[in-house]
Length: 217
Image 1 (cartoon, rainbow, N blue to C red):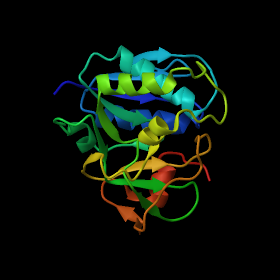
Image 2: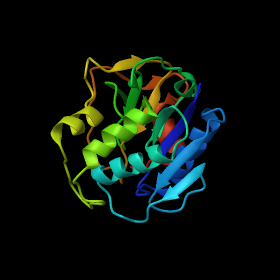
Image 3: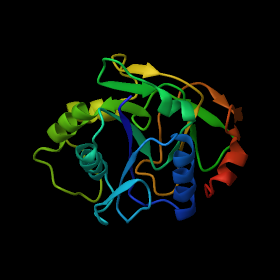
Image 4: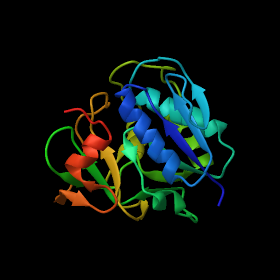
């Protein structure tokens, strides 16, 4: 399967946390090629450093487009700087759809004693490279090159990129993937469902996982 990983970061989180997230990505991705697009130089796959352009969703989308344009594979597996993924996430082989989202994602907050189940979200998805280039080019047309702060562009594509409960998006599954809410996140909130747990497969107890990844309270 012709796949590569697109990792994008604003380098705004605690350096030790980011280092451990990146180590987990390398350990679990089973040698797939990585394109990393960052605000600071990064020793992770093929790195594209855009400079310290500020933090916004628009900038994150610009980084995604830059990474997708540089990719040479048919499929792109998204990897965000606040996510840890199981090996099975990278093993999925898509078929005819443009976009698939992982449906077993759990959120960890800086405080509290629970994992919270989320709907499928854009930080855990695989998409056709040409589709990503097309959609993000359309979204960014007429927008500033970089923007530091709150920015919302055309509503239809913005909803496509961030919507968490679209029934038309195909899903795939496997062991839990984890998204952390830390200092430095663009959003401190998140969409969560009704399920919660203190201990989940692979990752263990929520408190121990936070300590292992240096998630500061």
